[in-house]
Amino acid sequence: MRKPLFFVSLIALSLLAATANAQVNLLAVGALTDSRAGHYTDLSGLTNTLENGVPANLLGGLGSGFAWASSNTFLALPDRGPNAVAYDSLIDDTVTYIPRFHTVTMDLKPNTGNGLPFTLTPTLRRTTLLWSLTPLVYGTGEGLGVGPGAPAQNNFFQHFFSGRSDNFDPNRNSGNARDGRLDSEGIRVSNDGFRVYISDEYGPYVYEFDRLTGIRLRSFKLPDHLFVTNCKPVGDDEIAGNTSGRTANKGMEGLAITPDGKTLVGIMQTALIQDAAEGGDAKNLLRIVWIDIRSGKTTHEYAYLLTTGSGVSEIVALNNHEFLVDERDGKGRGDDSNAKVKQIFKIDLAGAVDVMNMDGTQAAANAVSKTLFLDVVQVMGANGITPDQVPAKLEGLALGSDVKSGGVTTHTLWLANDNDFLQDFDGTNTNPNNFYVFGFTDADLGGSQYVPQHFRRF
Image (cartoon, rainbow, N blue to C red; front, side, top):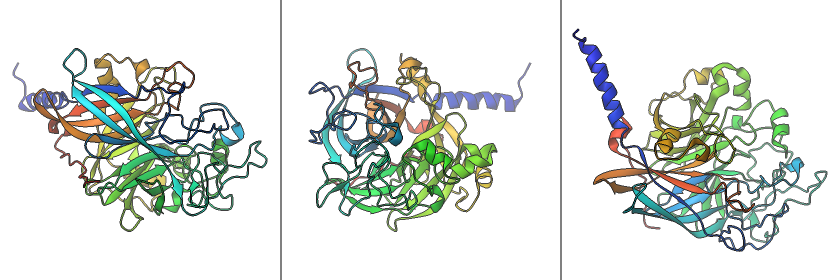
């Protein structure tokens, strides 16, 4: 029987869609493998031991944030430190670990042997500690069974940020930029290469730092409804003690910068407390903030709905209005389970409804549409990486330099995992910090145009 024309057309479109995604593939996998002094060490120069017995220079958690910095150079960001090691539950097992970022070069070369198309060799080049010239607020430790929360490295000029959860002013809301606590999660580099932008979960904050020295240059103004009124050193207590604001430990997880270098785009990991309380679609509502770098102010807010994962870990810009969003569950390597949801969606904020003044239900009804760009678990599985070996916390996402693959110009998408500093601390190396490089072509973008960030000489 002759098929109707529209039926044939649907088949043709399906074949085109399958062909369009054929180039999204895993190109390379690499890991930082250098181990010194019995554990993986960074280049911070710190020699002391943290309160939980972990070396202050322990290298780990590199995939909390990941940013391209031109050519083969990337910045890798750990979070608030090695609190997976038990210490004191009254401060969520946090210690006076100083937040930092690492400069890493990625040597990506065609593979002339068997296996993936490319080999990847990461090399740690530099570690930069984050600090403030003006004094910060630290906890006294009183009633918590611990000492003061100020890092021992503080001096007259340098007041270092810290992962300690009690380093806040109890008389101010969580948006107080004088608080010493910082749980860094997203990182991007300015187009001139001299500045670094970092988002965090405690505030949430978005700070600008000098790339060379690590000094904080300024704090960006975020909407008040993102902050909690009553700060607590224990995340669960903070959630219970507030009716609005970000959910503790699930603040501004992702940060993007538009290729023109004018805008920062931050995304919350999960719904705000007040949005989740409304139920319905609002409980899956994530707010996206649009920050004008020049003025330092938030100018728009957009809505994103979770559909498959338990939260969003990162956002990266394809161009000045389209973005890739990393949606995931918490399953996989490091969780002793099988990964299920590690999916990257494409969204377009051009023409999206501004939900700044909307409640959760209204905002959810105006969420941006999204299309699946990459199913990470599926593609890794096709390359022999079983679900139990897919990292549970694939949190770092960056776009890098183009390569030639099979004679075709191929764009690169980089993923990195947060291994909670357990790379080799227990001597098993069961959860290393890996870097995964995926390749895609213009055909995979479904009509979108990829515009890489343009860096001027640093």
